[in-house]
Image 1: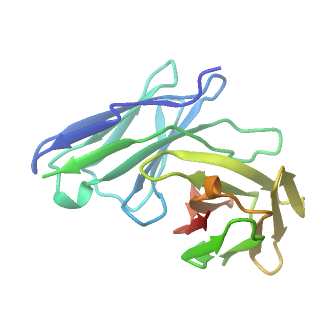
Image 2: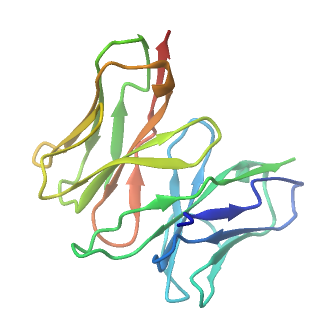
Amino acid sequence: DAGVTQSPTHLIKTRGQQVTLRCSPKSGHDTVSWYQQALGQGPQFIFQYYEEEERQRGNFPDRFSGHQFPNYSSELNVNALLLGDSALYLCASSTVGVSGANVLTFGAGSRLTVL
Amino acid sequence: KQEVTQIPAALSVPEGENLVLNCSFTDSAIYNLQWFRQDPGKGLTSLLLIQSSQREQTSGRLNASLDKSSGRSTLYIAASQPGDSATYLCAVYGGGFKTIFGAGTRLFVKA
C-alpha cells in the first residue's frame, strides 16, 4: 500500500521563478493538505483540498495556489518566488474517519531552495 | 486561536535514559492530538494518535498521554536509544480543516 508520494524531492529555483510541486495521496484518502516547514520550525498550514476545491487557507499570500484532480492528487504552485520561500513543503493526506477526525499521513516532502 | 508549544526545544540524554517530552495547547476543544517523528530533512512519521476521548496511547517504548482540561500532552520514551535521535512534533486538530503543529523538540541520544 503506497503512502503519500511527493515530487520532486529537491529543486533549486531563482527569485521570481515559478514552481509546481506534486502530491499523490495515500490509497483511500480523499483530502490533501499542504504545509510549509522552514528550517528549525514546525509545519505551517498552507491550504487543504477536498473534492477539487480549496476548503481553507492559512496565512499565505495568493502567490501560493493549488489544485486537486479527480483522482485526488494535488499540486502546489508558488509564483514570483522569494528567498523566504525556501523550505520543506510537506503534503499530507487524510479522510474523515468515523469520529470526524483529521488524521494526517505525510509524504517525504519537497525541499525547495530559492537563490 | 490555537497555539501549540513544545518544551524543551532541544534535549540531549545518554543512552538508556527514560525521558518525557511536553506539549501544551491553548484551546482544549480538540478532536485529536498526534505525535510525529521527523528525521533531518525528511517527512513526518506518525508515532501515536490520541483521540479526544482517550487519556493515553502506547506503542512499544512510547507512551503518550492527553489531559484536555489542562491543555497538555506528554510523550514518554522508555530506555532511549541512539536511533531515537530525531525531532518530535506535537500536532493538534481542533475541527475545521487544519492541524496546528508545535515547533518540535530536537532529541539527541548519546551512545
